[in-house]
Length: 286
Image (tube, rainbow, N blue to C red; front, side, top):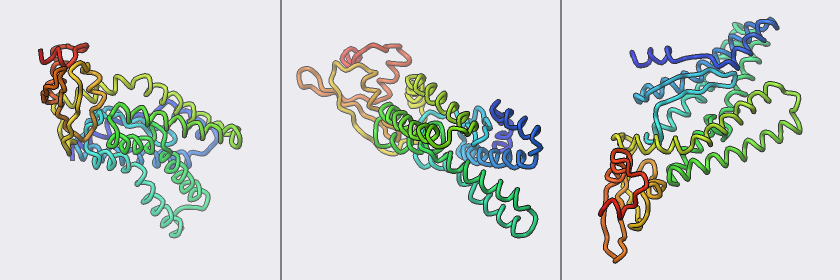
């Protein structure tokens, strides 16, 4: 129970949301503002409580007008089931919220204007978050699926490229048919900055993925998969073949057709503890 209560201490409001709050106050739309805040809060608490259930480490939960961003100290080594549950736990909240809204409206406890505002914002926030663009929920689902089919670094790059394609489609639609929507421009700006930052930090994210494997997070390991390499291959090149959900044995083909088998932890130990960041497998064995 304590871990769920601690989630509430991680919540903060993004500056973009404060802008919406100020606009709501000056336009006398306070009730609508409260409803929007509740929708966003419940959406993000869905993610946070699911993460807390699996004992994930939560750094911060930032509320934005279209959902929120939960910063988790987890770096791609959880099981696919856990990852998908945590991601989907946000969007699924809109289903029961819309059902409750309908019941309150039918019971006469919610007037028509507030009801349609509530339902429309639930639909918009749900649909927007399901777009396959990082860091939206749809983008995270896309990455989770790709990372179980391709090596982690390759999956991340594919996810970023696909996110940019979908972002371009939305941007084109905005330019042609929705150019007067200021809020949409703000959201697109947020997505553009997020994509740029994620791409810029992709190597750092990969290092965190490797470090978490090295320090013993095996909960997401479901299968064993060998990786065949040449003795002259450098450690980093081998790491780029690592996949989430798999424990790797490294089969080394020597220059004279001899074979060696190493555990992935031996390579990670050499890289992170012994600082042999430019070494080849041959140098490691020798």
